[in-house]
Length: 145
Image (tube, rainbow, N blue to C red; front, top):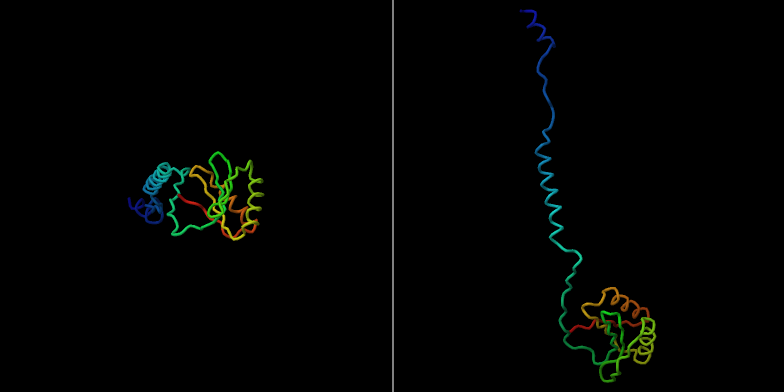
């Protein structure tokens, strides 16, 4: 009996310490976070953008060149104010830009106001602003109702 006791003291079968981390609680937390992040985006609809409504300015310009953009893509241009001209319908964007160039040469001090319906494409309005700036028009604004 003494020999079995002495062999366990010298390095026979003894207890070994386990140095492992219990990962089960971490897996549970990660699964809960995964579910939260999967459910949250479905509650928001990113395809709908609600743009704010603008207030009217204190005093609109007296005379200005107005470009009207319809949701169907129809374009019209005219002068509003004291020197009012009837709006002309433009068949395409190039014809509108030619007419804008003529009106700007006749009235270089007039600002350009772009009136787009709320159903109009945002890209079309931005393209009109960009093309007006390329013509050298420095005062371009958006008309509000």
